[in-house]
Length: 71
Image (cartoon, rainbow, N blue to C red; front, side):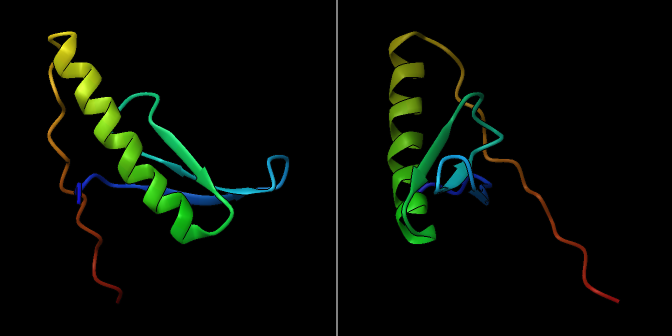
């Protein structure tokens, strides 16, 4: 499992859950459920990394995005 940050949201026009992977430009996935969207996102990340390797491009390191403790 890849450890990239993911943003999940509902898209009314698409009638689907969308996952964006901000550390990988252009990487997005969708699904009928949040779980399906996250599973597809893992596949998208694998394909993004494979394509970058084939092209000799750098692979971004997953960024550490600490969430502040609630007060």
